Figure 1 (cartoon, rainbow, N blue to C red):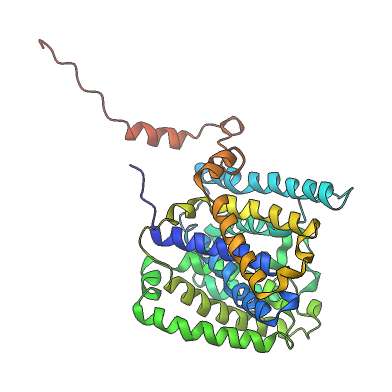
Figure 2 (cartoon, one colour; figure 1 turned 90 degrees about the vertical axis):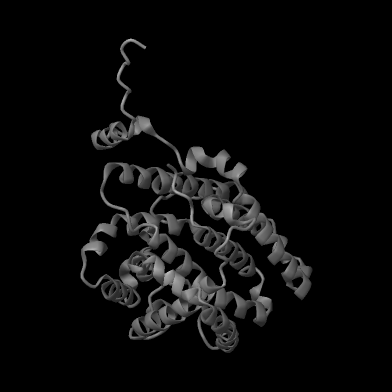
Length: 353
């Protein structure tokens, strides 16, 4: 029997991927508008933390069982290798000839797959810890004051986003029910208004690099002690806004609910379109910086990523996003035994019928 998907989480994943695409589009035009940059900072405070948190929540059942390790390889490692190579080749053809291909230095948005692979591999460790979340926060705080970590697999982001993944592992379904209460939905309205006002204030006063969680404090021109302080401050803000975001996610099935299962294709493909527009200079047009132009870009980004999450696109890319690769793995005796147990017993032959 196939387990029915939870409409709430599919809706949340779809809305989060729309925010990702819209944020990447706003990044190209925000230098000309304080309002756009303020909205961008609000979105970047919570949209990836929310995505990582949900990913952590769905990784609770991960262990080192062979079938789950195979799914980790086919569903995360293989798409990373394929699309990391594709992004580098695309860059080579469209913009920068002779670009070096390196799987150690994720391109653009590919850092998330590298991070997800590492986080999920460490899941059994977090599950046996007595206090996993404080440890994860400590790791993120230490990373934020360590500029020597380097760029391999974008480890700064891996470590600074780690607490959200671990928090997702710790959350139970009733926690998500709590944030969906009517009182939380009402409180989310002034919360986002205050967040926008704070972001507006921060634009000329605060380095936007803090929102990416990919740099140590020293790399952003701040003293070392600002790293742990900002890690905690950004986490508090991210969790408040994530709660507000989840409070407004519908729990019933909608037209977009089924698209939540295809967010991986929307995530992986929309970057090509954004980069193509950048390489071709489409964001250099004067009209895109006007209010109607920004609105048009926002709607276009949401529509395009929606189309990229549809079942036909998902089926077309299944060979690289969800390959079976049975040829690459040994048969799992435990899985074969479980399959035999699920098979109905043969009826005894009826004599004299």
